[in-house]
Amino acid sequence: MQSKYKIRLLRANLLAAAIVLALWTPATPPAAALVLWLSVGWLCITALMLDFSHRRSRGLPWQLVPGALLVALIAAAPERHSILIWACAAMLMLPQNNWVAAFNLSAALVSSVMVAPQLEKPEFILLLCCLLVLGLLALSRAQQLIDMNGSIRQRLRLIPGLNLWAGEQLLRDITREQTRCEREGIHAEVFILHVKRHQLWPAAQKLCELTHDFENVYRLSSTALVTLILARSPKEAAQRRSLLLADLPDNITSEYLKLIDIEPSTLSVFEMSKLPDERVRETI
Image (cartoon, rainbow, N blue to C red; front, side, top):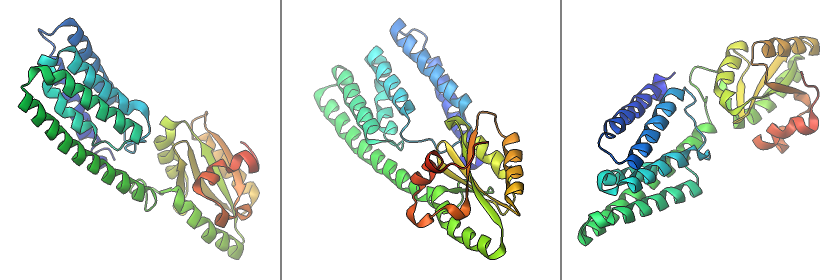
């Protein structure tokens, strides 16, 4: 799974960047050396903490860290680190919220002002023009990624090979499963699991392994997973819930709803993730 999403390549690139910055530290001023080592540490920690959770939320504030470190590197020694200003355009290629993009744009502008004394006026104007063109191309690419990721989250499996689907698919499946349960006399429940953000993907993998092939798992949000439990009776369904929770981390909380009690035509994914607060049947 890691190679599928190029996690190993990304980790190698981050470690390579850390090595390059580390080799840049000799004969640097103390302030610049401090920022360089901070950047090396951040790159190494990020590389080591990477896992197959490739869909990082574009709203997380971690995206501010590389931008802030980049500005700090240029500010510490503009005459030595002026070449890093081209990395500002690369920062804009990341899928990000508008306020993060505004921060990175401001960082690029501040960085260009700091390197201006090292350049002649025509060179500075050319620098600004190049940064503007590259920035627009980067923002366009970032928007393409945002649109593409949004469409992926609303269709097909989130992880190839596993029965993990987007929350929008759950709303479509509920109607079909309700009809089948009524026709075949099957007891069905919507089993909702609340996890920590960092537990989402490992817990999703584990839940897919524990459920039957005909039972899908759905991602409602960054902290909520759902699976449809099909059983012959409520007693058997309760046993299934207990078995599932026994193999999952202890800090995961859960609720369930009878499938027949849900009105999918009046629900959204957000409302589905909030159902337990108002209509909880039982907490295990």
